[in-house]
Length: 199
Length: 199
Image 1 (tube, chains in turn yellow, brown):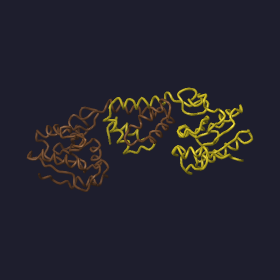
Image 2 (cartoon, chains in turn green, blue):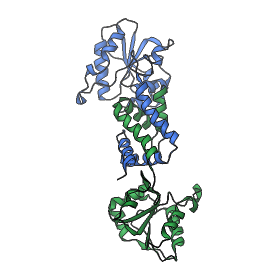
Image 3 (cartoon, chains in turn orange, purple):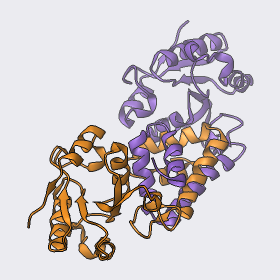
Image 4 (cartoon, one colour):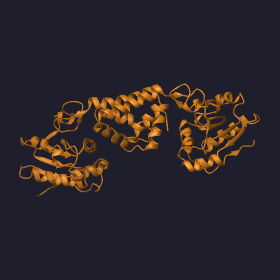
């Protein structure tokens, strides 16, 4: 319905998650009326994020360097590792200020329907990290849904017999939801009440 | 909570209308995982829209040329002018296929609370367009809310005594809402049932 550049922008905005046709139109007209510097900053931020952001070689978290800030921080306890699905889960846990260990980001959860198996996740990298015996405790903080539980059970079986304490975040997290939406207190209590997995 | 480029992108996305912090984070991680070409197209569309899109010198609609497609179309009836608030209202009316005249985009509505008076709208340009007597009918299609009604009444008084038929879109539009959200049938009927304003 719109001419060239306006329609192009509406089309591209409409591809973003959670942005429907009306929102895309609304944002496009906001952009048309906005200060060119503001729009330039957004366009720049989009290209910069693709150019500069990569994944930490150690833990798989987002990072602009070969290793992320948390892996490089000597004050973090290298004996405790928290395994999460996505980088946004690291941010959610950091917000609780309950956890002072390090992370391992799997890059998803086991999901046979979407064709995601253990080999598609950073599980091999996790086993390599654990090989030197420095880590004595692994906290599995995958999402409290079917895929997350399946991944937790799979990991607990992989880690059994390695002399590592393996735990799962306590119930207290709302079941069926996403870890990233939990409030700080709920997530903090889930850390305190984590329970050992016996397989 | 995030490092450099990711946080920059979340901040910039969060400035867009209707995009809260959680949506901004969700879009940012979508961008991180997306094909670089797709992200490049979005960044390009943002800068292009600011570089190429301007406003039609005649009607004030968005356009990439000095005059918009509708003003340049010789098949459009130059005797009937439809006055709207915003370019998106032109698109909404075009979708009904009920109206074959031309448009005049005011760039807003009279709104004393926001400090928008008649001089801030393209009313002077409207009077200039009407001066040659070519237009015999003006249809006022401002939003059916307080500001739109005030603008319609103001325009009707300005146009009184010029020998021009002045009408307002019929009731049938939901009151208190935005014209752009009306469905095609409601908006089409509102055109059919437009009523003359007698002042």
